[in-house]
Image (tube, rainbow, N blue to C red; front, side, top):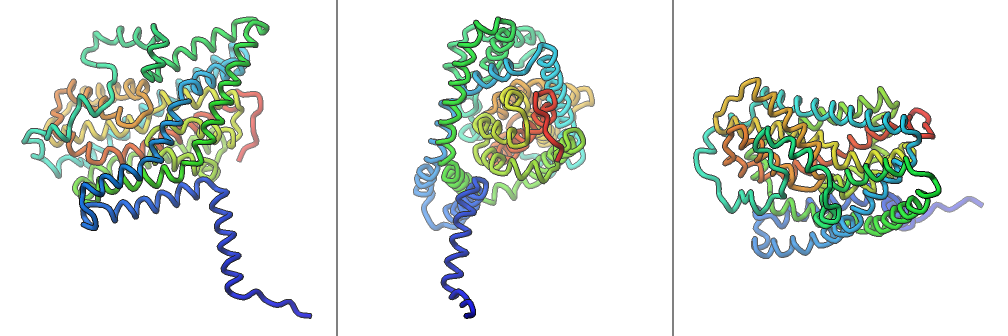
Length: 446
């Protein structure tokens, strides 16, 4: 008897079932779907369409963003214990003091070199494309205080008003009051404290350190379990945050400063290509393998604009790429706090953009100072949304560049923040795969 072919409705139902199973088993596909749907809904609710009143659209946007805020709050709740326990555990499992020094020196060299290259790329692109000259004269009038609330709307960063303050800045890195640093969410202080505790643990007898390390392992496991719960909200978080962003910004803002946005995106693309090249040449990890392993990770970083918020996922991605657990637990938290090459590139373009807007010509020496300052500032900047704007204002003011043009930068900062965060997270993963050979279980090349 010949086998009967399935009816078309049955075939369609079977294909739908396969598609549903494919999407539900892949977080990156869910996140991508949420991003696309959120973008479309944001366009429908934007002021340009006129489908709803702006006040009503704003209320809808707030409710749409609720899952995203809950997602970020859950991550923020466990972020400090997760960072502390992962760094301490990573240091204790890094092996001998010589191996530990090797990891630290290689990571420091990677961060310093890539951040310097990134800032230089930003300067070169801004000098070549000159995105601010097309809008020359914009800054003749004063900025709208409602749009540029530099005191209230932007997170605080350490002041950089004079070179004489540098010794104080170095001393202030040490968490003299660890409890206050934890309460205030000072990630750099928490990282420094974890580094000091982790190094000290490696020099204590195993018997005495064992209970403390067992506690750190339990804290890390509990924190990662809460992160696993939060990941169920990730697609809905991306959907709501994307819809709110597109609804508020619209296409008009993007079209008005396409030169500036294009310069930053071109620079980030160049930096991303550099990361891919480094991973391929020095770690034998192909771009395809890297993107395949980190797809959902990078989409989450793009949507949340926070390398710290997605740090637990980045650790898991590093493990997928064959990075030993002790190296991943050490390198990724440090990278999420200090590896901000994408931010340095963005700030370099923005500084020269502001100078071109105001008609200020910077000398080669001044540009070199800008690069050095941005490298130092980016390495110590928290991996949270908006903090780069505060650094940008400080550097521009110190260089005598008017900041009235910040109105333009603030209009698209959220979008560019999303892009540079994804690049920063890629840099963290590349750093991890570069340092995996220091671990105990090197992996096969891709």
